[in-house]
Length: 425
Image 1: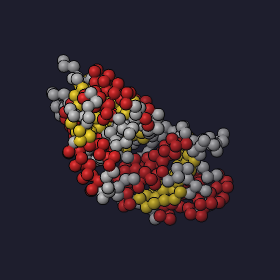
Image 2: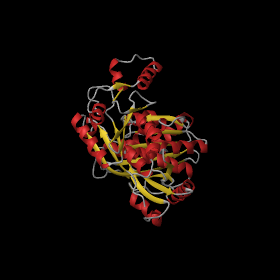
Image 3: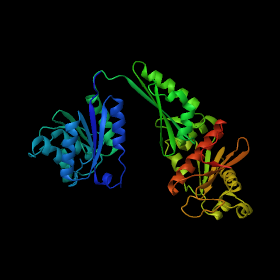
Image 4: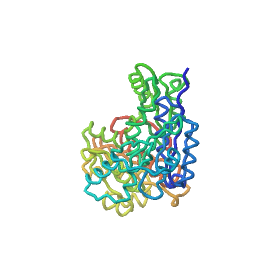
């Protein structure tokens, strides 16, 4: 059996080392290289320091057949990937201006009606023995070099530029000949824990099975990952993903690239209803998630950020007696908020959220993380509410509350129901 080529990933940037930015590139590249049939042996992150970058390049290239580096290709003094590479492959000889890179730069700025600063011409420079990798989405071209026996690729850091270049240029060049056909599908789930989902999937997750089924969790969403290899991989992966989605219903809401907001809007369109929201502790997060979906205006009417009790009363018609007797974080309050939002927006369905996101404000009966979510279904003149206790910091509580509200709206539209892991009686 042939040994797969070994690949390494290098990320360059002070912001990555200091933790002020998250390195998502390494994860994206690692998964893609693995799926292409390479063995990823190392991720390394270095600061914007010439010696550190050069040393990392030399060490990783010596151990790998393929090196993919991101970052450090901008026009400023702290963009040092280019000179570090030049020191390795050409001994620090004067670099040359690449005519194609310069033409692309001039075209990029002209197309936006902006003058090009002279500093940007640094991006058209390359080591003499290196070729340019054109960047259709930005000003920083990539570089391709041979460092000994290693095929080394250097790409810009922004994912919106890096990913298309990687997929168009790097993957076809480094994919091993005869690598097996591979197809991946994803099923996203919300409201169920990873271990509970694994129990539902059962033997589907057995090692060595094809299609291969696994789970990952991120942002409170648990995803089922399906990978099929060999002839007919796409058909088998699609069928397996559909079966997994059926097993994971009703928590499963979309495939890769989908969102809870997009799923809810799709259900609204299918049902012929408009959606409205009334948010307190989430402060507009649900509305933001919905309007982030292109074309949402045909299914989302709008909403209210009713943070104060006065606004809940004045704008949504929540009775003052309800707020005084039960408080804003209560079943009674969110049910009244949801009904008021539906009536005032003339919407077929409305969701309302009120809670204690923290870090302060909790009590023994309503600890930090307590959130009530109400849903009013005008079609059936039915209102219901659920109580949650979300663990985590303020932003995690708010994010989970917003997603839980969308999931409850989705279930209401579909006539489905289940418990979520954070629900409390």
